[in-house]
Length: 388
Image 1: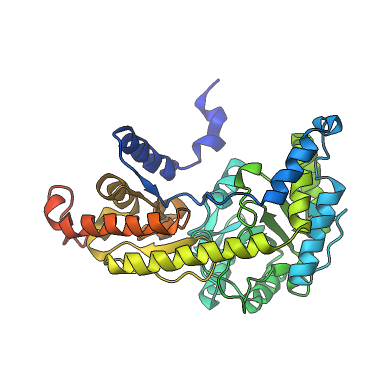
Image 2: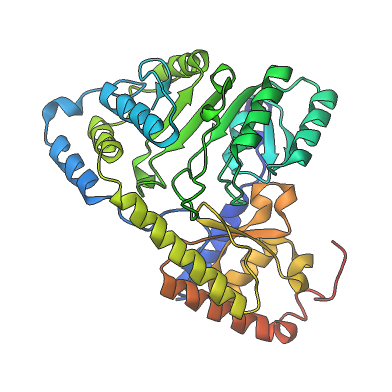
């Protein structure tokens, strides 16, 4: 067996976040109390009624058997009902619900998944404006082979940008013109802070069902990240193709988890409003406390993230080394922007996955580090460097 047989694996870039994880582990081994604002891993509990439904269902022997690979009917109906309730979009739960041009910066798997499948990635700026479509036109004209799909993610991980229906309408028009499939990641649909403008779905746009599939998740809305339940909805042919592939890969998620997820989607929405309010308070604490520490945080309108420029005096380090330095010197972990694509290297992503007190403590730690950086880092980097 030769290395050439693993060519798809070798195409994957180094996993940047693992390097930060190693620095975190080393610091914790020495007794450091690391305030981890790096991973978008919800610290809130799943809703109590969902947990109770899981407990109730686990005790039934029939649920120990294989499940349906595309999800139990009740769960698919619940997801279809959610789309009609939230977006005014009607879905057929039997044919349109199942439990590449790529933006940069973006959630890593948006690109890595295609690489593992043997695809070729052409990056375009991760903006929801006219420049995005100009870059898309250039990519279509100059890419060989011709792209067959485009990935979008709004509210965005990592940038926290939000797209509106005008953007999606133009994207659908562009996709039809160039015969592209649109893959929309809507994992953060319910994590928003302006009640007047909740994030829309691309499927609200007339004609979107001709070209688009949208992916949603229980992970952020219901703080069920470890439960591993999500959905693909939209174009019938694309959903059918995905269902066929999935039927060869598994026999579905554990049935009690699907039953509990159904209870979440059909149940009261108080827990969603409470989740939203919790993240809003944390976001406000982040902006206030880090601003006082000397690090201005752009105000995110949605998601659990802030996409934050590296302070000018540290930009020459790059985002990975800066993130390592924050762990070592301030006991604060953030996600380096380079992990989301080369266009992210002047930024770090901060996740509000610690409580307000811990976030304010992180800001105090950062301030102490900033105040002493000019004397403690003279052997690490010339802070006046402008080589980047």
